[in-house]
Every structure is written in structure tokens, then in C-alpha cells.
Image 1 (cartoon, helix red, strand yellow):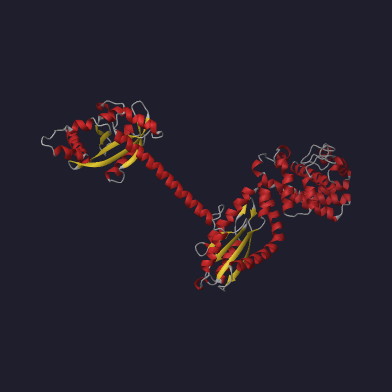
Image 2 (cartoon, rainbow, N blue to C red):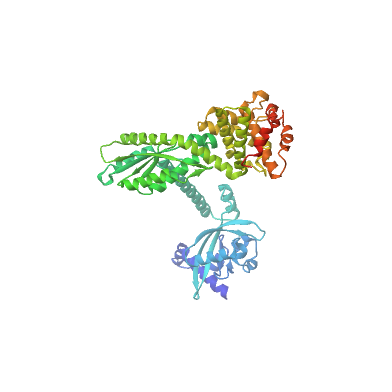
Length: 534
């Protein structure tokens, strides 16, 4: 009886939806009695009535049973959870939303008896019956929407009417048209954005900056400050770490400037590494705080602090043109940049070396020993003070290029990696590029690029042999070897006399045999024993 009552409810709804048929029947002299229960049961659209609490299928028509490949009795002994591949919690939530009329048209994936997955378009509304509500759902299979011809064939197989088929085609055309319209709107908005903004940073471009300047040329925005900024050593970053990292730096600085100006003005990228900020109706104190926050930022890339030079102009005359203000700010910015130039190069050297030391703390101990070994060698070989200073500087910076290969160093000891990893063997050339970009003296760079050449020609990067290896590079290589051996002798508490035997095996192979003769000088050995850094 319960199912019969539900059938009568469905019939009533269906009659209201097919008002035209009902009116036509009622207007005739001899009304035709329609068995609406049979009409609903044999309708080509899939129909289900569900219990919203348990998900039990209270009613299914023949179309639904045929689609899900169950008999009517089998299907009405199922729950919607048996058909729906969503979790039970999600299905319950969906039914609750239908009851609240918050979700009446939606799509789900159902599973047939044989296990096939079908995309279902569902229209479902709550129906009140005997002070309780059930869910009346009409379902459409939209799995084969991809190709229109297949859809038509599928609908033909299912004996659907021409009206339904045409409606689906029209819906698809509308959907595609809507999609094209949405795409055109998005494309228009993107083009409009790019016409006003820099593609890399999202900041205003030069033309939009000019518009902002003209808008600010009103008494209420005076005084107006124009700040011009330039990223120091961006060329060095591009040459050393690559242009992708350079773009990262530009975006980092751009985001930092956006944070500083917030909604109090506008900021623009006017060229590669140059930015302009307009700050209207602002006090001088506040502007100086903004400038200080830009110049003393905490931005960092691969151990290098990102310095920004700032020049500014205070605009109190409404007749001052954009080009005039820009020229003044630019001139002051370049003056500030020249002040930073020499100090920044030294600062970058130290930052990169600190980055290397953090990854390889043993380098710092080795450097201290190398410096003392160089002093001892300089005394024993009567080197002039200029050569000794150049050797010490070369020793300090010889492995600065390792910042580019830190992710590839996997050996317990960096010395093993320097001898065995092909990519890391390129670090003398990387050191050369970095130091050249920082305008380091050429005689120091020349020592560094050849300090891993071997006397027998098996070294790197050039494979130079014997006397073709620069003399000071041979001395640095010898000092490095002595330093490594001294650390090992000290660690294992061996007598200093063993150093001669240890180093002799490298004579004519990696080291200049003429330099090894120094180990026969007892004064030289005595000086090595007294190195303070050991």
C-alpha cells in the first residue's frame, strides 16, 4: 500500500508537469481515462523515489531498471548508496541539500550491475507525503556527451523522442557558446590586464604609472613623492645563477615594494631591474621609513642579500611634469647606486663564502691553515708581498663557485667530491665567472681558475701540464695539499716527519716536484709544526 500511495503522488506531480495533456483531455466531450501509473512506469526517462534518511529506493520505473541492469524487484531492494560511487557521508549530505532545496540539479557517477560507471545528470526535488518528505528524482545518462552523433545514436537506442534529442543538441550548443563567451571574456580581461601591468611582477607598467602620476597632480595629493629603485648587481645574479633566478629576484623585490606601498600609492616596474613608486599626500618621515624598509630588506637568494638603491624626489609643484620628476629621481638613484657599488661587491663575496662555510665548515679551518702555509712558503721562497697577498686572497675565494653545486655534493668529505664529481669539477670556472662579475683583480682570478690543474696534465678545467700551469696556481695547489696533510697528521697524532713521505707520492703527478723540495728544508718543516691554526 505504501508504494501505491507514492505512485499516486508521482502521478499528481507528473499531471501538473504535463498540464497541456491534462487540459486537452478535460476539454473533450468524452474524457479519455489515462492510466497515469502505467504511463509513469513506462516513461523513457529514468525515475527514482528515495527515502532521504536511509537512501532506500522506494520506487523505480522500467527505464531505470533497464539502465542499471537490474529487475524492478532487485533495484527497489537497493539503496542509492549501492549505485553512487561517492562515500555514504557524501550521499547523505547531498540528500540533505536536496531536502533544503539547496541542490536540485547536479551530476553524480553511478555504477550499473555489471560494474560500468555512468555520469548521471540528476534533477531531484523533495515531495511531502503524509507529513514526511521523499525525494523524486529524474536521471539522465550524460556519459557519451563527447560526440554528438553517439549521443543521438544512444538516444535512438533508448527510443527517446525527437524533441528530447533536439533539446540535448541545443543544450550542447548553448554550453559551447557559453564556454566560448567565457573564454573570450577571460582573454579580454587578461589582455586588458597586460595592457596595464607588467607580466612578470604584476605591478603597473610605465604607461599606467604615467596615468597614476597625472591623477595625483591635484592639491589633495601634494606633497607627492616619486621613489625610483634599482636592484644592485642583478647582472651578477643573472650571470652567476641564471636568468630564471634573476626573474625570481625581480619578483621578490616587486612583492616587497607592493607590501611597502600597500594602498597608499602605486608601484611600477619601468624596466628590467628598475621600479618607480608614487606615494601621495605623505609626510617626509613616512617616506623615509618606506625608503629604509626598501634599502634594509631581508631578501636573500642563495646566500646573497638583495640590495636596492633608492632615489627620490618630493613633488610640491603641480606643474612639474612626469619626465622632469622621473629624471631627478633617476639621477639621485644612480648616485646612490655608485655609492653602493664597491662596498656591495665585497659584501657579496663574503656572503657567498659564508654560504659555502655553512655547508662545509671544514673549509674555514683549512683556509686558516692555508694562509699560514702561504706565509711560510713565501718566506722560504722569497716571494714578494704582492704575490703573498694575491695567494691569500685566491685561497680565500678559490671555492666560491661551489655555491652553484651545493645540491650535488653528496660525499662525506668535500675533498672527495672535488676530485670525483664531474659537475663540481667545473667550480673553478664558476668561481672565475663570479669573481669576474664582481670585478675582482685578474691576477687573483687567474690563480683560482688553474688551482686544480695537475702537473701531469690530468687536472681541470683546462688540463694544463707542467710549467704551463701558472706558477702561483702551482703554489696554491701545493699549499692546499700541505694543509690537508697537516690536518690529518694532527688528527691522527702522527709525527711531522711523515708529511714528506705523504706528499712525495704526488711529485710530478698533481704537484710541482720543485716545490716538494721545500720539505727537505728543516726550517720549513719546523715552521709548519708551529702553525697556530692546527
